[in-house]
Image: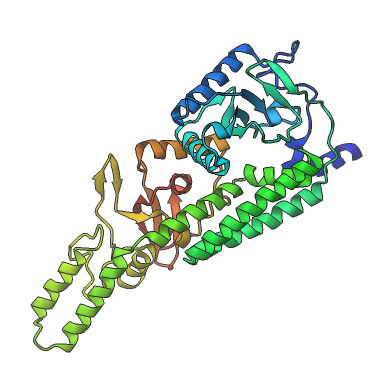
Length: 421
């Protein structure tokens, strides 16, 4: 291998995350006409139709659309496989309400709902909608008016001078802070997680905006932001805030019933008036409130309540040789032993949405979208428990992460029992 080849290989290995930030010599030929440098007619027509449909779905059809623009890296020379079609619908926010901050929040919510329900691809690129106030400045170096068919800001193919080390340093620092938010949620410090997540999201927003205003699209801040968006870190941050709120507002009936049962069990031990048969009957009555418990001699422990969590299933298998969930139930065309909280599985099994997912962005979005459409997971998560005291997910890592991102509170689980895991 020549010295040049070895240096190039070393560069690719070290800076592979940044290769897609480099500029091309031409606009993307799938979207732009090479001769006229204008957006292809069929694509322009489809994007206008999407913009109109969105405005109608937002119940503001009476508002005049000032312009519909195409911006971002695909309206420039720095596009990559990760790029989206950034479709901006320009209106006067005061046409909706004088409180422009409230209008912005409204459209942000409508945009999030639209993106959750729709997954529109044009030549392999996802369409991302943004409603922009006509007074809002745009920092992009390429802005194309779909309404007029003309460039409002013509891009130029300039090779950026990227500060690779600083980009990585900034991105890694923000990732560590996002990890701290995730840990707070895992420790069930939900209010702290929510507060930290909100402050961090605002910090990242201002961080990126400052970079755009100072040095533009190739600023360290903007490229660090793109790295976080690309690897899913920003999705993790958003999900932590939502799930922390849901957990904080939820009431765990199972824990309440366990406390009730403990009180009754203590009462039974201390009260000679309570006969043995009455105590067994009382125990079975309280067991009936616990979810998905199979009342057979094989699954009911006479000393401790039946397991309803991964730790308890593992403990019952290791200590008492009990298969707590052994009978497959069938509902919604899904066979499973028990429905368990998605977050419990994520926390107990140490599933990090960003570290454990092996697959492309499109595959990930498709999995999440199918779950949103059906409202449930069609395949169970398979968890193996071993006599050596270990547990592992043997099938369903991707499905579990997709269910978490889709906001599914519970997922079907099948347990496998082994000597070693």
